[in-house]
Amino acid sequence: MYTAMADLAGEDKDQRLYEACQTLWDNIVKKRMYITGGIGSTVEGEAFTIDYDLPNDMAYAETCASIGMIFFAKRMLEIKPLGIYADIMEREFYNGTISGIQLDGKQFFYVNPLEVNPGTSGTIFGYKHVLPTRPGWYACACCPPNLVRLVTSLGTYAWSESETTLYSHLFLGQTADFDKAVITVESSYPWEGKVSYQVKAKKEKAFELAIHIPSHIRPDTLAVTVNGEKTDDMSFVKDGYLYLKRNWGENDVVALTFDLPVRKIYANTNVREDEGCVALMRGPVVYCFEGADNGECIQALRIPREIKAETELCKEGVLAGNVLIHLPGYRMESSDALYSEERPKRTDVTLTAIPYYAWANRGENQMRVWMPEE
Image (cartoon, rainbow, N blue to C red; front, side, top):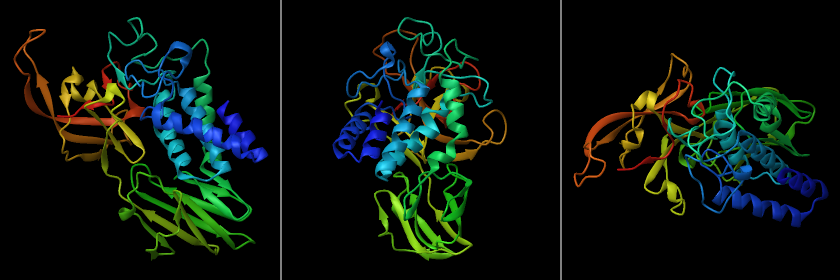
């Protein structure tokens, strides 16, 4: 419905309807969205509840709902090319949508929780919708084909155009053929901060190329070159887009490089479930911790306030091709008593985080996105 509203606002150039769409957008993104881009915090009606109510282990966050946010973002971008819309579209693509499909493409999630505890999840009343592993199919199968349709139409979300400008919304490796030019994008994103655009202009040489710069990229790490010559003036970055206007040739190359550090993310203090916890992101990718890497009882793990994280490109197994994060952490170990005056002992451990979308690909085990900070 929100997508239809934005469609109508754009078609009729209805400013009041656009402002209503923006109000809805702001409420979702600023108060009702999970860090993964998931929306819909309750299974009852598959709905929103109230502002900041974002339970991790009872989330609904349907795959189709995240796909719907991509539809909404695309329509808002068509009305006004703002980085805030492209940022959410990117967040959904790398997290809340593709977590709905097994890495081998054979099993699917409807529900995308941020915490799973086998024995509770999928079993106990109130948690039965939160499955610890992806089923092969569903009686009502809307999410699997919807997700496959989305993935096979990625190019339609990566670009848009106006009379004077070609807009690149996503760092997506592809060749796009427009009336103005053929543009080939080569990208190792999101694992490396390297993207290049080869522009082959057609008859019309003068036009703008507007490249979305995700908000997580620190300006001081961004370097831009055009045909090998560095551009130091970033004054042509507006509303999250880098605007390059010139007479383009038949073999011009725009190259971007930037850092992709591991970032600690904190939730608004109104989100009671995440108070005292921290999540990890690298680029647009949200990370999670699984028992397969970190042992049992992952709620006993702690992330230090100061972290020295290292990244590793996984080269074997089901996670091959994904970048993993390793960092020093702690495990709290208590006595056998259910309650005790004795403080749990702290031991040093090495923690491993994997991309959130890749969880539940190694059997049934615990998973958490938000981890306590010590």
